[in-house]
Length: 112
Length: 113
Image 1 (cartoon, chains in turn green, purple):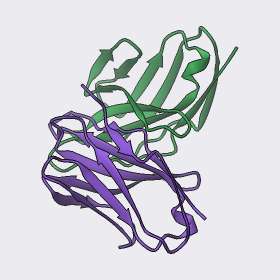
Image 2 (cartoon, chains in turn yellow, purple):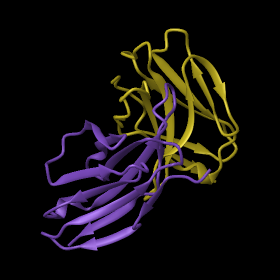
Image 3 (cartoon, rainbow over the protein chains, first blue to last red):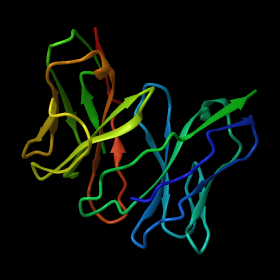
Image 4 (spheres, helix red, strand yellow):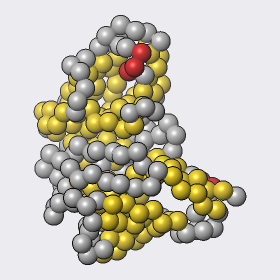
């Protein structure tokens, strides 16, 4: 499974847009890119998933360049409640590849 | 659609005891995975069950075991508990279709004294 690299921590202020970039140089053809959010003592919550180009949902956008070796999670107008750890993962998510390898994630702190 | 549920949410045991944790996946999901999360090691994969068979296994000792029932509900068991087993145990389910991600439950917080 592809290994990912993302910043250890980031700081932002309420109302700002936050972009977290993830590097995955060894991504395979059938891998999807998925981002999870986790609050302390809770299970990771699915945020967004994509394969290529851009994906947008009600909480975030995911930008994936053509070579797919990196991706950027964009959180528009963050609030204090967005303070959490964000994990970037790549995996095929099918046919027995449900063995997710989590890195350390990015600790996002949103300040008033 | 109801999410992944885990019981119990909190558990306190003493060293040497054994514990069984339960996970009910999202309706229709046949794959159930278990993870252990500790401050030192982060989120680590334990094992995955699909159609009542263990399909993937992480690097944990044999004290950690699991099973899956015909309704896809899963249990994990830890025998001869050690202090280091104190952790948040997370269950995740998926439909196992291409591109379908895993959805996590709230976890079971286990404290071993």
